[in-house]
Image (tube, rainbow, N blue to C red; front, side, top):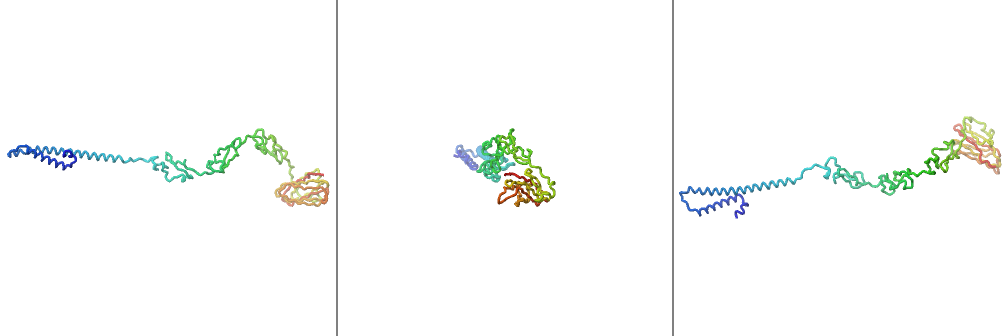
Length: 379
């Protein structure tokens, strides 16, 4: 029993057991050996040293073995435990892109760590902000509300937006070619679309064309040697028609009419023969009155046409006939005035000889050139 459980006993207990075993062995020895002579008492110590030696051998052996076990076990447990504890502490690491922390120089974001930034804070209208593998912001998931000018046809009313024409081209719109453009209001601009040239397209764009409709390639009545009028183009676009261009009579030199002239009264009127029309003259240098006479048979009708130049700030002009019919005309915005002369008949009989008297009260300040012509004579 003692031998089976000796390793579980304390040192003091083991020592007590050793002593008890020693005493038991000594008692057993006394029973087996014969009694010795008292005179040999001095030799009794011979047996004691052997017993003491055995006891000493047992005692130190037991103690040494147990002590060694205890010493071996205690340091071993402590060493293993300390080593394991040191292994569980994580090693320190330097910050790096990908650790989900904005903790390194140059990082704007890291993984899901975006700081306080959002799509809205960056000027977008919505969406999800992301972070790239290099820890820079990824705004590809941010969105903007559709507006005209976002380069995308994405709302009602937009025909185009920037370079987005919703699939339309000049050709799809019926032209032969050219380039579409988009206005700032997102409407299609077809001004650069073209058709293949032809006579009648309003442009001089073929070698055979001299003109096309109202396009004359810089030509006008003036460049054609006339004073005024308008050009027309032939149906084949290869000829210019100048039939509506006119040459004007040379301008009157006002110096030739300087001062009062003899035809300043009815008695001094200048008679105009039927073959002398048209007559040109001018109000110049204080010459305020001009009187002319001419003949229209009583049974005939005609138009007396007066043309004045210039027409700006046109002054009042008084017209009269020697028959007593007076007409005051004030046409500040017209260059030509027509007086219709009817055949003589009751209740408005007239003589054959008529007179035209004109009065310009501002002749000392302005000059007015005029022309008198008798037209549409019918008898």
